[in-house]
Image (tube, rainbow, N blue to C red; front, side, top):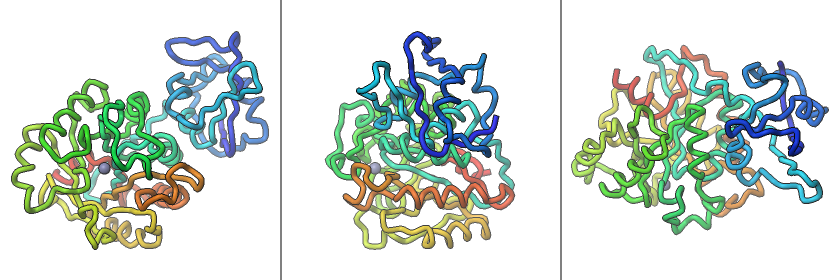
Length: 352
Ligand SMILES: [Zn+2]
């Protein structure tokens, strides 16, 4: 079945037609076909696995939570009309197609997309775009923000959209995205890291029951404190940690890549993408990673569309059109030239 959903899918969920089976909503495919109408075009492969007995199985959690603010109840219709942006619709239709492609590391360059704070727009905006281009990434969750026990002081700015819910993180994990640690309350302390790890394990979003990577909040791990931090990173069982250029420093826009193996596995450096970064600025370091077989870790926060809450409020977001341009470029990169990989897998490859 070949589909591209270009604008919106509107699924009319009519109570009698839509049984709940094992927490999945069975939507008659006829409903989708009819409702899609002219929005159905022809070049995106959607695996037949998603179409069962003439019905499309949609996990109800995807509808109710993963799409977040984009799931709206149409007041004018008795039954709920669920309006799903094309990208998000594509994401769930492809959700049983693995996003974690079988990659083969042969010493080529690596590019890792990391998203700090696991903001709600990660699930709402970034994941659907990455799904479209079959890319994977790592998001670093502030677990206290995720479960509502902690509210960052900056959450009313670019984080105004809120944090991903636990369910959203579980869904992203099921798609092959790495959900990693960023503290329970965004602190660089042993206790806060450990509290975060306990929750990630409880939520079942670790690989083999292990939290493998950590991003230092505000990139405060540096050469002055690394010897102390290294001890609790090791005690927590982390395989590596990301730091980078300290937030607030004057050279925050410096873009750099790492060579293999990393100089210090607990202080992997990232290049920070802010609202002012352009794809043209980014391109040379992507090309450097490919040409010179380096590891390029990009540190992103929110991915927002104009008009989204928080857009334009501060520097900690990147316009979704820039991000789409990056993803398209990455998807066209031959695997023999460079891999797009998570932090945990990138570290594993870089250490081989
Ligand atoms: Zn952060």
